[in-house]
Length: 318
Image 1 (cartoon, helix red, strand yellow):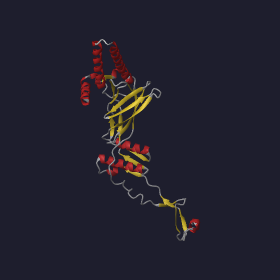
Image 2: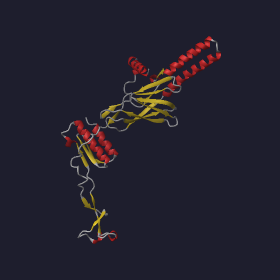
Image 3: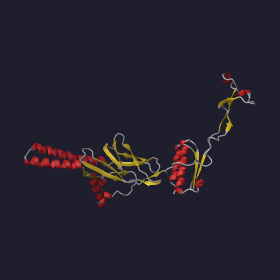
Image 4: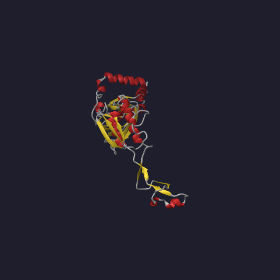
C-alpha cells in the first residue's frame, strides 16, 4: 500500500506542473508560504472520514441528535487539524545549510538551520532515505537539524531536494513542501588502503640524529673524557659505576614534503588517493607537512585546519 501511494505521488508530480514548480535550485534563505504547501489526507484520515460518514448516516436515519452532534464535533476537529497542519509549515524558513567533512563513499554530515517566530511541533525533514524529526520552539527562534548526505565521488556535489512535512496534530492530514537549495558541498577524496610512505621519509624515526641539548635527556655509563661536572653523583652512589648526564636528544622530525610531481607515473585519481593517505598519516602522527599541487602550493603546517585545507585542495582538482 505504501509503495502504491508513493508511485501515485511520483506520477502526480510528473503530470501536475504545480507540484513540480520548485524543482529548480533556489538561493537561501527559503521561506514556506501557502503557494508551496500541499495537503492530502493520510490513510488514517481517509478511514476517519469513512467513519464520520457512517456515523452521519446512522444519526440521520435514527434521528439521534446526540450522535449527530458528536459527528459534527469530530468533523470540526478534523477540519481544524487540517488548518493546524498547514500552519505548522506556513512561515517556516530555511536560513542556512552547514556541511561537515567526509571522504567519498561515506555520509557527509549536514546541518539545516530553520527559523520561525512560532513554535513548530512534530516537523520532519527527509533527505533521500534519511529522515529526522525536530521541534522548533518560539523562545529559541531557530533549530539545527542534522542529516547525513550519501556521497559517491570526490569534488563538488549538489544537494538534492529535501522534503519538509508534518501530520501534526491528529495524523489526519499530511502537509508537505519541497526545498531545493542552490548549494553544493565538497567531498574529500578517499585515501588508498595502503602503500609506501612519502619518498625519503621511510626511516625517519630510526635515522634521527642526536644533537647537543641544554637539559639532561638520560643517564649513561661514564666514558673516558667526560667532564666531571656532568657526573650524576647521587645516582652513581646507588650503582657500582659512575653515571653521566647525557645531554644528547633527538632532533625534531623533518617536515613531509608531499609533491604531486613525485607520483608522475601513477594515474590521476591514484595520485590523489595516495596524497590523501599521506595527509591522513601526517595528521595522525601530528607531523608538519607541505603540499605541492599543479595549481596550488600549501606551505608546511599541521593541525585539523591545515589538514582540511589540503584535503579541500585535493578534492577541487579537475
